[in-house]
Amino acid sequence: MAAENKANNASNDPKKRKRCYLPHNKPVRKKGPSPIRPGVQGFFITCDGGREFQAAQEAINVIDSFFEELINGKESSSKVAVTLEKPINKKIKFTYSDSDEEENDDDNDEEEDKKSVAPPEDSGNNGSSVEKISDHADKAVQADEVGPGNGGSKDADKEPTEVKSKENEEPPEKKQCSDVKSSESGNTGVATTELSVDKLIEAELKELGDKTKRRFSKLDTGCNGVVFILMRRRDGDPSPTDIVQHIMESAASTKKHMSRFLLRVLPVELSCYTSDEEISRAIKPLVEQHFPADAETPIKFAVQYDARANTGIERMKVIDAIAKSVPSCHKVDLKNPEKTIIAQVVKTVCMISVVDKYKELAKYNLRELTS
Image 1 (cartoon, rainbow, N blue to C red):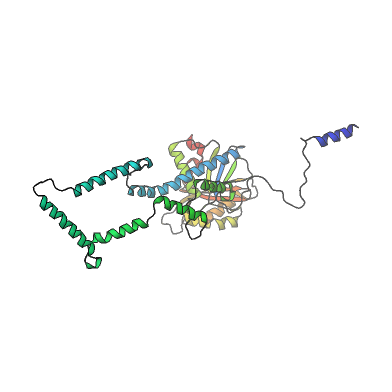
Image 2 (tube, rainbow, N blue to C red):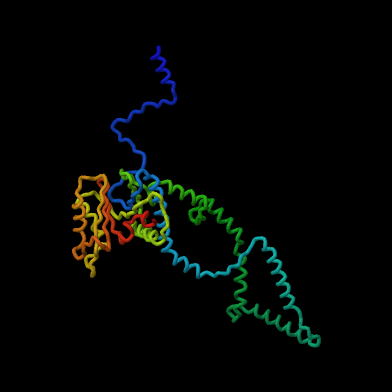
């Protein structure tokens, strides 16, 4: 009896979890960010252990703000030039002042008509003034009768065309209504009106919700204290090295605290598998960009290597593979290098980049630069 009561109580308990069985021969979907893989660009970031989630959110905000600064800095000169061309003083018209302006215009027109029609004040010359007015009227009638081909004046030719154009034009309110109606009818030949603000906001929210369209997103490294931010680079965007260089220089100059959990922020220009052949093949375009073979003055460089969650590859093999790919005209200087080649190995992925002023900027450590 006791066993039956326990079984009944267990079946009636709503808090007890139901048994779940895995599907046969099907992979289990893992929740969270996708793992890091070769062929990606972005930012390799170290942080305090156990604070990876907070550091990832903070890193995205910091990188995005400095990315916008770089973009706006490039476009600032063109914006200033455009604004200077426009006049500074502008005439502002209000809807409630239209009636007042119309009344003032009518009064001015009436005064001008009176001045033009009124005879001169001299009472003695009334006859001569009447004759002059009649002569002017006769000349105006003759000018009207003469056509454009008979040597008529330009003003007489322009007046009828201007009147026709004014009659054909519609008032602004009618034009707006016709545009709205044409857009609602859905005719393909008519240009559609601009989207409203609500629709633009909805489109932007959809783009932010789609993870594949985000410019910066997080990838899972599988290591404690390490965060990787993926950058989907578009045409005209600055490289990760430019963004990190801008962050470090501003931090060194202002000494302003930018983050709470971030330590080192390193750019990643390329990534590949950790093997001698893969590294020497993938690093060729990066070496050609930073270390040209026909350089007049040799460039001093050094290789900085770190590995995490990987004990199967030797340290010197990776360093030799990177150093041999650099042309022989350039020299190795470990004390005062002009450029530093950074190689970060996480599991089976090697991430490589070339940076300037590595030691001068505290090895790209934000906390040391701002402290």
